[in-house]
Length: 165
Image (cartoon, rainbow, N blue to C red; front, side, top):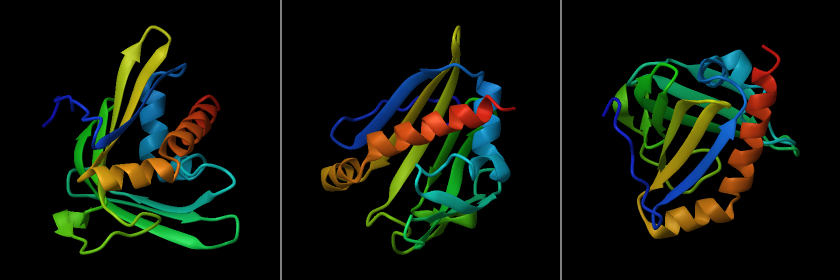
């Protein structure tokens, strides 16, 4: 899969694509370093209060999000593909070591796989995030839960953090 490009299926996938004015190496750094990721990953007023990253295929990607009311939502996933400064792929259907999770965790009632692709661009980075779902109903629910607004706000926060580095 390394270097491959996922062709989104509009029936099953949600896509956020934008040009951001920071280089891919900085976007990568704030995506792959827990202390940086905690500053931007969850759209405000939510916060990310904990993060564990084992940046390799089969490694864990774990976050704990806190709602404004104080409720905590752990999310545990597994990296499937890691291409430095270019691509991250993970799923919440698996835990560390590709172990199946058995049931969805965190804020969602179905599994999805996420792909984040970074491509150099004359103005910084072409940032593409894709959430891949098993069926149309899961995709619809994720969209209704605010995929575009939430992931877009998080991306704005990511750029703000990257610009401080």
